[in-house]
Length: 308
Image (cartoon, rainbow, N blue to C red; front, side, top):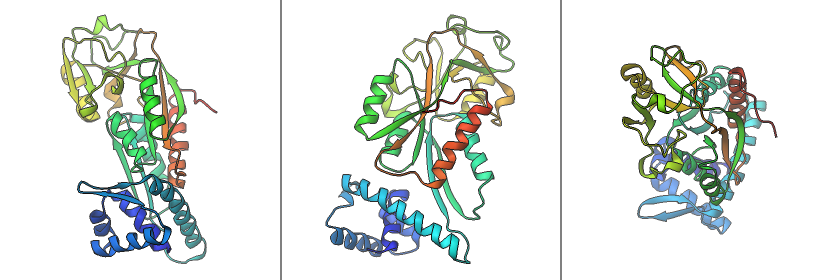
C-alpha cells in the first residue's frame, strides 16, 4: 500500500467517478482503476461497489476512506513542515441549506487561509442531497435544521446513514421580505397577514416531502406559492413580487441583505440549526476550521451558540 494509492481513492470519492478522478489526476482511467484494484487485492476488501450505474463506497470502503484521509493529511503536514516546496492543496466540501451565514463563514474561512493552493466546494442544495452528500462522503459537513415537525424523520434518517447531528443555535422563525414590503416595518407578523402575498420556498426535487422542507409550517396551504432552487432568485422574487419566505432570521452580511429584512413570525415553533458529519470519518483541518468560523459568524449575528 502506497501513499499514492490512498490519494487515488480519495480523488475518486471527491470527484464522484474513476473517469473524472483520472482526468483531474492527469492519468489514464485504466491506470487509476488498476491501482485501486491492486490496493483492494492487497487489503482483501472491496473499497468500491461497482455497478453498471457507476461506483459507490462499500461499507468497508467508507471506513477505509476515514483512515486514508487521516494518513494523507498527516503526510501533507510533514511535507509542509520539512519541505521547501509549496504547501499541498487543501480539499474540502460543504453542503448546506440555503443560508447566508453558511456562505459568509465559507468566505471568512478562505479569506484568512494561508495556503496558496486549495480546492473547496460549497453546495447550497436540497435537504435530502445534503444528507446523501455527507453519507456518501462527497461532503465532510452538512448544515440543516430540525424542529418538532421534522425531527423524528430527519433524525431517523441520519441515524440510518451513520450521521451525527451537532446543534449550533436555536432560532425563532422570521419571514424574509423586501425592505419595501408593506409588512416590513411590523414588529411581528402572522401567517394570516401574509396570505395575500406569494410564498417563496426552495424546491426539494424527488424528496418533495413536507419533512424535507427548508421552511417551517410546510403543511400550510398557500394561495400563491413559488418554488425556486437558489437564493439569488428567491431574493429577486421577494423584491419584485412582494413575496416572502420563512427562515431563521439570521441574514449575516450577505450581498443581498441590505435589501431584505427579517420580521419575527408569530408562532410557537422553533428551529434548531446544526451541522452533520459522518461518524465513520474524521474531519479535515479545513472542515474543522469551517465549523469554528461558522460559529463565529452566527455569534456575530447575535445568536447564542449551543456548546456541548
